[in-house]
Amino acid sequence: MGKSRYLTTHLRQVSGNDSAEKNEKAIKREAMEGAASGFGARLDNQDEEKEVMEDDNGGGVVTDDTQKLEGEHGRMRAVYVTYHINRLQNLTTSRDIFVSLNPHQRPDSELVYRRQIMSHPQFTRETLAGRKAIKEEFQGKNGLWFCGAWMGYGFHEDGCRSGFEVATAINGVPLPWAAQEKENDDAAVMVLPPPDLAQFTHQQNNGFFRRLKHFLSYRIPVAICKAFVTSFLKGAITKGELRLRLNDGTTLSFGDKSEVGGDDQPVTARIFDDWFFVKVATEYDLGLARSYMAGQFVVEPLEKREKYHWSLCPAGSRDETNDVIGDPIGLTRLFLLFVGNRDLASIGARRSAKQHTYANALQNASGLAISKMGSFLNYL
Image (cartoon, rainbow, N blue to C red; front, side, top):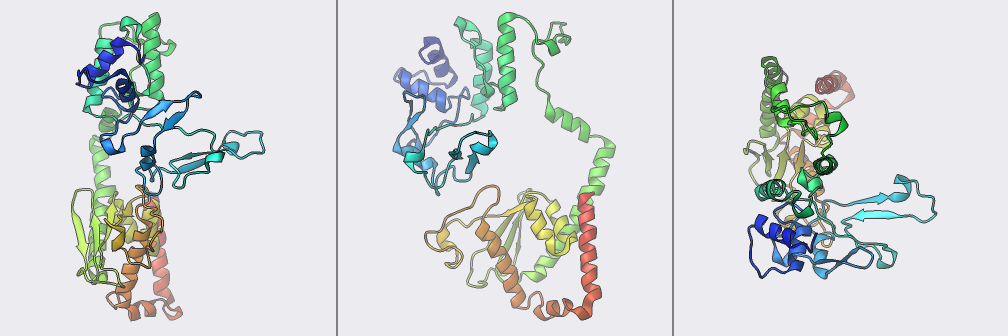
């Protein structure tokens, strides 16, 4: 396909670039790394572009520039996982086989069997326009047929559907499970279309009783608990600064922005789900931890590592921040902010110590009861 003049012309037209200066090699690389037709992820930053060529074994021979993808500070550091293939595929060998994606520390080159640079399709407006142009103007012409997950939305099912569409277009025989279906013009359906999940979800949730249930079971509890939590934080955080960034773009700020425990930087929590307020308000001491485990919030990292207190982020320490867990050091800073305000008596250290005694067992038990009731509410 890479040597096809027709395909080369197609790539230039779809990408909106008819420049004759692009040679065949550049066109082939564009196809691998993401022309507008959606073949992969093209890198816009020229300083970070990589050159990928095939070696005799079909593997990737990569220049030094690709190291910017990997390592502790690489662009792909958040997507780091290692698979133990012996266990996953029940290999009958005494030698351990591992597959690592974006390792922070590069494995010993003598133990590496193969290294491959891969990329996912990037779906933009240009991608959709290019994909449409392929189907309407180029599909099936001059003996060229295009199929793959990139012809859909990048999932395995999209790859199957794309292959089915090409196969049925070539042989004219519909899929067995689609043979009984008819289109509006009574023409046979060759391949069943993908479901419109957005329309289905809208229809399911747009009924009167559904909206009433959502209002009573979500909006009202969130509004009440949000008011309770914000009121508590206004009294609990008087020193330092705690920020809550919400989905609607607003930011709630608490504290006087002063230094607490040697930390003069704000602690910013990004709230992904407003049910966070319900968990914190109803689950007593464990609400904050459980909402974090549920992925309802993360603590955002500071812009520069130099702004962290030296005891929390020593020089040369690994940055383990990612999109899933946020900033692990930020969690420590969050708890130290609460502890610092407690020690400053903003929460009331003496009052807190007095409450948690054997003499006050009834009040302690009431807190535990509230926690259990809150857990049951969240379960419902």
